[in-house]
Image (tube, rainbow, N blue to C red; front, side, top):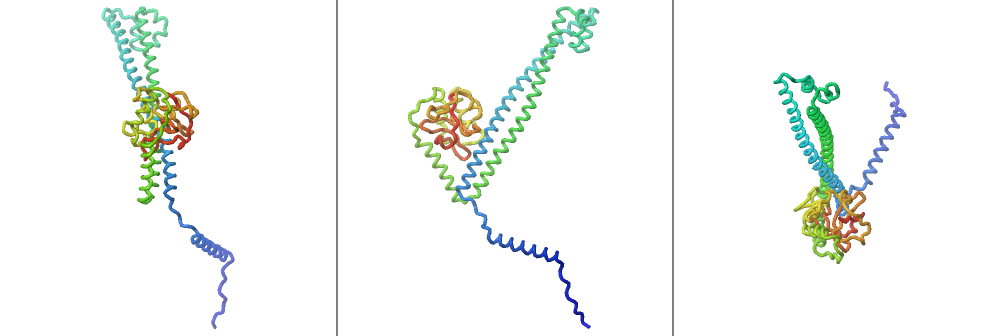
Amino acid sequence: MASHRRPKQPSRTRVTVLTTAAAAAVALSANAANAAPSEKPSKDEVKAKVDALYEQAEQATEKLNGAKEKQEKLQKEISTIQDNVARGQDDLNELRDSIGMAAAAQYRTGSIDSSLQLFLSSNPDDYLDKASTADQLSSQQVEALKKIQEKQRELAQDRAEATEKLQDLASTRAELAKQKKAVQGKLAEAQKLLNSLTAAEKAALAAADARASRSASERVDLGNTGPASGRALAAFQAAQSKIGSPYVYGATGPSSFDCSGLTSWAFAQAGVTIPRTSQAQANAGTRIYSQSDLKVGDLVIFYGDQHHVGFYAGNGQVLHAPRTGTVVRYESINNMPFQFGVRI
Protein backbone atom coordinates (compact mmCIF):
# COMPACT_ATOMS: atom_id res chain seq x y z
CA MET A 1 0.00 0.00 0.00
CA ALA A 2 1.41 3.32 -1.05
CA SER A 3 2.60 5.74 1.56
CA HIS A 4 0.67 9.01 1.87
CA ARG A 5 2.97 10.78 4.35
CA ARG A 6 2.99 14.57 4.14
CA PRO A 7 6.41 16.08 3.25
CA LYS A 8 8.33 17.44 6.26
CA GLN A 9 7.88 21.20 6.71
CA PRO A 10 10.97 23.37 7.14
CA SER A 11 11.55 24.70 10.62
CA ARG A 12 10.60 28.26 11.52
CA THR A 13 14.29 29.13 12.00
CA ARG A 14 15.21 27.85 8.54
CA VAL A 15 12.37 29.81 6.94
CA THR A 16 13.55 32.98 8.69
CA VAL A 17 17.17 32.54 7.52
CA LEU A 18 16.14 31.89 3.94
CA THR A 19 13.78 34.83 3.90
CA THR A 20 16.45 37.17 5.30
CA ALA A 21 19.03 35.98 2.75
CA ALA A 22 16.58 36.46 -0.10
CA ALA A 23 15.73 39.96 1.06
CA ALA A 24 19.41 40.86 1.31
CA ALA A 25 20.04 39.55 -2.18
CA VAL A 26 17.17 41.61 -3.57
CA ALA A 27 18.43 44.71 -1.75
CA LEU A 28 21.97 44.25 -3.07
CA SER A 29 20.66 43.80 -6.58
CA ALA A 30 18.56 46.93 -6.27
CA ASN A 31 21.47 48.96 -4.90
CA ALA A 32 23.76 47.72 -7.64
CA ALA A 33 21.19 48.68 -10.24
CA ASN A 34 20.59 52.12 -8.78
CA ALA A 35 24.22 52.98 -7.88
CA ALA A 36 25.77 55.56 -10.14
CA PRO A 37 28.90 54.39 -11.89
CA SER A 38 32.11 55.83 -10.37
CA GLU A 39 32.97 59.01 -12.21
CA LYS A 40 36.45 59.92 -13.32
CA PRO A 41 37.55 63.26 -11.78
CA SER A 42 37.55 66.18 -14.19
CA LYS A 43 40.68 67.91 -15.38
CA ASP A 44 40.03 70.82 -13.03
CA GLU A 45 39.50 68.49 -10.06
CA VAL A 46 42.75 66.69 -10.84
CA LYS A 47 44.57 70.01 -11.12
CA ALA A 48 43.21 71.14 -7.73
CA LYS A 49 44.34 67.91 -6.09
CA VAL A 50 47.74 68.06 -7.78
CA ASP A 51 48.25 71.69 -6.69
CA ALA A 52 47.42 70.70 -3.10
CA LEU A 53 49.92 67.83 -3.24
CA TYR A 54 52.59 70.15 -4.66
CA GLU A 55 52.00 72.55 -1.77
CA GLN A 56 52.35 69.68 0.72
CA ALA A 57 55.54 68.62 -1.08
CA GLU A 58 56.90 72.15 -0.69
CA GLN A 59 56.14 72.07 3.05
CA ALA A 60 58.12 68.83 3.31
CA THR A 61 60.86 70.34 1.12
CA GLU A 62 61.46 73.20 3.56
CA LYS A 63 61.71 70.68 6.41
CA LEU A 64 64.13 68.70 4.25
CA ASN A 65 66.18 71.84 3.62
CA GLY A 66 66.28 72.55 7.35
CA ALA A 67 67.51 69.03 8.10
CA LYS A 68 70.19 69.36 5.41
CA GLU A 69 71.36 72.68 6.82
CA LYS A 70 71.50 71.23 10.34
CA GLN A 71 73.41 68.19 9.09
CA GLU A 72 76.03 70.35 7.38
CA LYS A 73 76.40 72.51 10.50
CA LEU A 74 76.79 69.46 12.76
CA GLN A 75 79.33 67.89 10.44
CA LYS A 76 81.45 71.05 10.57
CA GLU A 77 81.17 71.27 14.35
CA ILE A 78 82.06 67.61 14.79
CA SER A 79 85.05 68.00 12.48
CA THR A 80 86.27 71.00 14.51
CA ILE A 81 85.87 69.13 17.81
CA GLN A 82 87.67 66.08 16.45
CA ASP A 83 90.55 68.30 15.30
CA ASN A 84 90.67 69.84 18.77
CA VAL A 85 90.73 66.40 20.35
CA ALA A 86 93.59 65.32 18.10
CA ARG A 87 95.61 68.44 18.91
CA GLY A 88 94.79 68.10 22.60
CA GLN A 89 95.95 64.50 22.63
CA ASP A 90 99.24 65.56 21.03
CA ASP A 91 99.67 68.24 23.70
CA LEU A 92 98.87 65.71 26.42
CA ASN A 93 101.39 63.27 25.01
CA GLU A 94 104.06 66.00 25.00
CA LEU A 95 103.34 66.85 28.63
CA ARG A 96 103.53 63.21 29.61
CA ASP A 97 106.75 62.81 27.64
CA SER A 98 108.30 65.74 29.50
CA ILE A 99 107.47 64.14 32.84
CA GLY A 100 108.73 60.82 31.55
CA MET A 101 112.02 62.38 30.48
CA ALA A 102 112.46 63.88 33.94
CA ALA A 103 111.80 60.49 35.50
CA ALA A 104 114.25 58.84 33.12
CA ALA A 105 116.96 61.36 34.03
CA GLN A 106 116.43 60.69 37.73
CA TYR A 107 116.43 56.95 37.11
CA ARG A 108 119.80 57.12 35.37
CA THR A 109 121.26 58.94 38.37
CA GLY A 110 119.56 56.50 40.74
CA SER A 111 117.60 59.31 42.40
CA ILE A 112 114.07 58.82 41.04
CA ASP A 113 111.61 59.65 43.78
CA SER A 114 108.51 57.72 44.74
CA SER A 115 106.26 60.52 43.55
CA LEU A 116 107.30 60.16 39.91
CA GLN A 117 107.12 56.40 40.16
CA LEU A 118 103.56 56.74 41.39
CA PHE A 119 102.67 59.16 38.57
CA LEU A 120 104.01 56.92 35.87
CA SER A 121 101.84 54.05 37.06
CA SER A 122 98.57 55.78 38.04
CA ASN A 123 96.11 58.57 37.34
CA PRO A 124 97.67 62.01 38.02
CA ASP A 125 94.31 63.23 39.40
CA ASP A 126 94.54 60.69 42.22
CA TYR A 127 98.20 61.46 42.56
CA LEU A 128 97.80 65.18 43.15
CA ASP A 129 94.95 64.59 45.58
CA LYS A 130 97.49 63.28 48.05
CA ALA A 131 99.10 66.29 49.70
CA SER A 132 101.92 64.26 51.16
CA THR A 133 102.88 63.12 47.68
CA ALA A 134 102.59 66.62 46.21
CA ASP A 135 104.97 67.87 48.84
CA GLN A 136 107.64 65.58 47.40
CA LEU A 137 107.42 67.17 43.94
CA SER A 138 109.31 70.17 42.68
CA SER A 139 107.23 73.22 41.71
CA GLN A 140 108.04 72.52 38.04
CA GLN A 141 106.74 68.95 38.30
CA VAL A 142 103.58 70.09 40.08
CA GLU A 143 102.91 72.60 37.30
CA ALA A 144 103.43 69.94 34.62
CA LEU A 145 101.05 67.56 36.35
CA LYS A 146 98.40 70.27 36.70
CA LYS A 147 98.64 70.95 32.97
CA ILE A 148 98.14 67.26 32.30
CA GLN A 149 95.09 67.25 34.55
CA GLU A 150 93.59 70.25 32.76
CA LYS A 151 94.29 68.79 29.35
CA GLN A 152 92.67 65.51 30.35
CA ARG A 153 89.54 67.36 31.49
CA GLU A 154 89.40 69.34 28.23
CA LEU A 155 89.72 66.18 26.18
CA ALA A 156 87.00 64.46 28.19
CA GLN A 157 84.65 67.41 27.61
CA ASP A 158 85.46 67.54 23.89
CA ARG A 159 84.88 63.82 23.49
CA ALA A 160 81.55 64.04 25.35
CA GLU A 161 80.47 66.96 23.13
CA ALA A 162 81.49 65.07 20.00
CA THR A 163 79.51 62.03 21.13
CA GLU A 164 76.42 64.16 21.75
CA LYS A 165 76.68 65.86 18.36
CA LEU A 166 77.20 62.53 16.60
CA GLN A 167 73.96 61.31 18.17
CA ASP A 168 72.24 64.51 17.04
CA LEU A 169 73.65 63.98 13.56
CA ALA A 170 72.22 60.46 13.43
CA SER A 171 68.77 61.83 14.39
CA THR A 172 69.08 64.58 11.80
CA ARG A 173 69.95 62.09 9.09
CA ALA A 174 66.89 60.05 10.02
CA GLU A 175 64.75 63.20 9.77
CA LEU A 176 66.38 63.97 6.43
CA ALA A 177 65.43 60.55 5.06
CA LYS A 178 61.88 60.92 6.42
CA GLN A 179 61.30 64.31 4.78
CA LYS A 180 62.86 63.21 1.51
CA LYS A 181 60.50 60.24 1.46
CA ALA A 182 57.57 62.57 2.21
CA VAL A 183 58.47 64.87 -0.70
CA GLN A 184 58.93 61.99 -3.10
CA GLY A 185 55.64 60.42 -1.94
CA LYS A 186 53.66 63.61 -2.58
CA LEU A 187 55.26 64.10 -5.99
CA ALA A 188 54.59 60.48 -6.94
CA GLU A 189 50.97 60.81 -5.86
CA ALA A 190 50.61 63.97 -7.94
CA GLN A 191 52.17 62.27 -10.95
CA LYS A 192 49.76 59.33 -10.59
CA LEU A 193 46.84 61.75 -10.74
CA LEU A 194 48.30 63.48 -13.78
CA ASN A 195 48.77 60.13 -15.46
CA SER A 196 45.04 59.49 -15.10
CA LEU A 197 44.30 62.34 -17.52
CA THR A 198 43.93 61.91 -21.22
CA ALA A 199 46.64 63.16 -23.56
CA ALA A 200 44.44 66.11 -24.51
CA GLU A 201 43.85 67.02 -20.85
CA LYS A 202 47.57 66.81 -20.06
CA ALA A 203 48.33 69.05 -23.04
CA ALA A 204 45.73 71.58 -21.89
CA LEU A 205 47.24 71.76 -18.38
CA ALA A 206 50.77 72.07 -19.76
CA ALA A 207 49.67 74.84 -22.10
CA ALA A 208 47.98 76.71 -19.23
CA ASP A 209 51.15 76.49 -17.12
CA ALA A 210 53.25 77.64 -20.05
CA ARG A 211 50.97 80.61 -20.64
CA ALA A 212 51.09 81.53 -16.95
CA SER A 213 54.88 81.41 -16.88
CA ARG A 214 55.24 83.31 -20.15
CA SER A 215 52.78 86.05 -19.24
CA ALA A 216 54.25 86.38 -15.74
CA SER A 217 57.73 86.71 -17.18
CA GLU A 218 57.17 89.02 -20.11
CA ARG A 219 54.25 91.35 -19.45
CA VAL A 220 54.44 92.39 -15.82
CA ASP A 221 54.03 96.00 -14.75
CA LEU A 222 56.27 96.37 -11.70
CA GLY A 223 55.44 100.02 -11.17
CA ASN A 224 58.02 102.40 -9.73
CA THR A 225 58.39 101.18 -6.13
CA GLY A 226 61.88 101.93 -4.87
CA PRO A 227 64.24 99.21 -3.61
CA ALA A 228 64.56 98.36 0.08
CA SER A 229 68.34 98.86 -0.13
CA GLY A 230 71.24 98.53 -2.53
CA ARG A 231 71.94 94.94 -1.52
CA ALA A 232 68.23 94.04 -1.68
CA LEU A 233 68.09 95.46 -5.20
CA ALA A 234 71.21 93.50 -6.18
CA ALA A 235 69.66 90.30 -4.83
CA PHE A 236 66.39 90.98 -6.64
CA GLN A 237 68.22 91.62 -9.92
CA ALA A 238 70.14 88.35 -9.48
CA ALA A 239 66.78 86.56 -9.03
CA GLN A 240 65.43 88.31 -12.14
CA SER A 241 68.30 86.84 -14.14
CA LYS A 242 66.93 83.37 -13.31
CA ILE A 243 63.40 83.90 -14.62
CA GLY A 244 62.41 80.74 -16.50
CA SER A 245 64.65 78.44 -14.42
CA PRO A 246 62.78 75.31 -13.27
CA TYR A 247 61.62 74.63 -9.73
CA VAL A 248 63.40 71.58 -8.30
CA TYR A 249 62.93 70.66 -4.65
CA GLY A 250 66.09 71.10 -2.60
CA ALA A 251 67.86 73.04 -5.38
CA THR A 252 69.87 76.19 -4.67
CA GLY A 253 70.97 77.13 -8.17
CA PRO A 254 72.46 78.19 -10.37
CA SER A 255 70.23 76.46 -12.94
CA SER A 256 67.28 75.31 -10.79
CA PHE A 257 65.78 76.37 -7.46
CA ASP A 258 63.17 75.79 -4.82
CA CYS A 259 61.61 78.87 -3.19
CA SER A 260 64.15 79.51 -0.43
CA GLY A 261 66.94 78.21 -2.63
CA LEU A 262 66.28 81.12 -5.01
CA THR A 263 66.22 83.79 -2.32
CA SER A 264 69.31 82.52 -0.48
CA TRP A 265 71.22 82.16 -3.78
CA ALA A 266 70.21 85.65 -4.93
CA PHE A 267 71.34 87.33 -1.70
CA ALA A 268 74.61 85.40 -1.89
CA GLN A 269 75.20 87.04 -5.29
CA ALA A 270 74.80 90.38 -3.50
CA GLY A 271 77.40 89.34 -0.92
CA VAL A 272 74.86 88.70 1.83
CA THR A 273 74.42 85.38 3.63
CA ILE A 274 70.91 84.54 4.78
CA PRO A 275 69.55 81.27 6.20
CA ARG A 276 68.59 78.43 3.88
CA THR A 277 64.92 77.81 4.76
CA SER A 278 61.87 80.05 4.42
CA GLN A 279 61.08 79.70 8.14
CA ALA A 280 64.60 80.83 9.08
CA GLN A 281 64.54 83.63 6.50
CA ALA A 282 61.32 84.86 8.13
CA ASN A 283 63.46 85.78 11.16
CA ALA A 284 66.46 87.11 9.26
CA GLY A 285 65.55 90.80 9.23
CA THR A 286 62.96 93.44 10.07
CA ARG A 287 59.37 92.33 9.54
CA ILE A 288 57.02 94.41 7.38
CA TYR A 289 53.36 93.61 8.09
CA SER A 290 51.65 95.99 5.66
CA GLN A 291 51.83 95.23 1.94
CA SER A 292 51.77 98.96 1.24
CA ASP A 293 55.11 99.32 3.05
CA LEU A 294 56.90 96.65 1.00
CA LYS A 295 59.79 97.69 -1.22
CA VAL A 296 61.51 95.92 -4.11
CA GLY A 297 63.87 93.25 -2.82
CA ASP A 298 62.04 92.63 0.45
CA LEU A 299 61.46 88.96 1.16
CA VAL A 300 57.77 88.01 1.24
CA ILE A 301 56.62 85.16 3.48
CA PHE A 302 53.48 83.14 2.71
CA TYR A 303 51.25 80.61 4.55
CA GLY A 304 50.75 80.24 8.28
CA ASP A 305 53.65 77.83 8.67
CA GLN A 306 55.88 80.16 6.58
CA HIS A 307 56.79 77.42 4.10
CA HIS A 308 57.03 79.71 1.06
CA VAL A 309 59.14 82.79 0.31
CA GLY A 310 59.77 85.07 -2.63
CA PHE A 311 60.93 88.61 -3.50
CA TYR A 312 58.62 91.59 -3.58
CA ALA A 313 58.85 92.91 -7.14
CA GLY A 314 56.69 96.01 -6.90
CA ASN A 315 53.10 96.81 -7.93
CA GLY A 316 51.64 93.88 -5.97
CA GLN A 317 53.86 91.30 -7.68
CA VAL A 318 56.30 88.75 -6.29
CA LEU A 319 59.19 87.02 -8.02
CA HIS A 320 59.55 83.45 -6.82
CA ALA A 321 60.04 79.76 -7.60
CA PRO A 322 56.42 78.60 -7.13
CA ARG A 323 56.33 74.78 -7.06
CA THR A 324 57.14 71.60 -8.93
CA GLY A 325 56.22 71.84 -12.59
CA THR A 326 56.72 75.60 -12.80
CA VAL A 327 59.61 78.01 -13.32
CA VAL A 328 60.92 81.14 -11.61
CA ARG A 329 58.38 83.81 -12.49
CA TYR A 330 56.34 86.82 -11.39
CA GLU A 331 52.97 86.31 -9.77
CA SER A 332 50.37 88.35 -7.90
CA ILE A 333 51.05 88.62 -4.19
CA ASN A 334 47.37 87.84 -3.64
CA ASN A 335 47.63 84.35 -5.15
CA MET A 336 48.92 83.06 -1.81
CA PRO A 337 48.15 83.85 1.85
CA PHE A 338 50.53 86.73 2.63
CA GLN A 339 51.98 86.76 6.17
CA PHE A 340 54.59 89.55 6.20
CA GLY A 341 57.65 90.90 4.48
CA VAL A 342 61.23 90.76 5.74
CA ARG A 343 63.70 93.54 5.05
CA ILE A 344 67.29 92.29 5.02
